[in-house]
Length: 104
Ligand code: FES
Image (cartoon, rainbow, N blue to C red):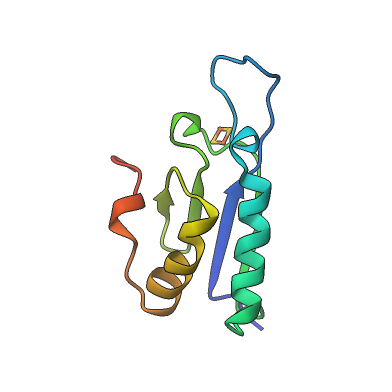
């Protein structure tokens, strides 16, 4: 089956104290699990895939998420935002404005 959307979650890890920080230290592994669970519960896991990604180069906005094919970037995403992103963005086609990374 052709994938409808692809959700990439940065899980890049850097050493503690690194000047750029990293998404993994901001709980992004849990975010991947939450997306997978939400997609599965919504019956979307065959057409929408969530997966780990390396650094998306927006570290200051982490945890960072980008959804393709739209190329919509989200920052400071927490597990509490997952339901809304899946419902609004994936199901209804409406990006979650409050989480958009400015200028991306
Ligand atoms: S470490 Fe996540 S965007 Fe760079």
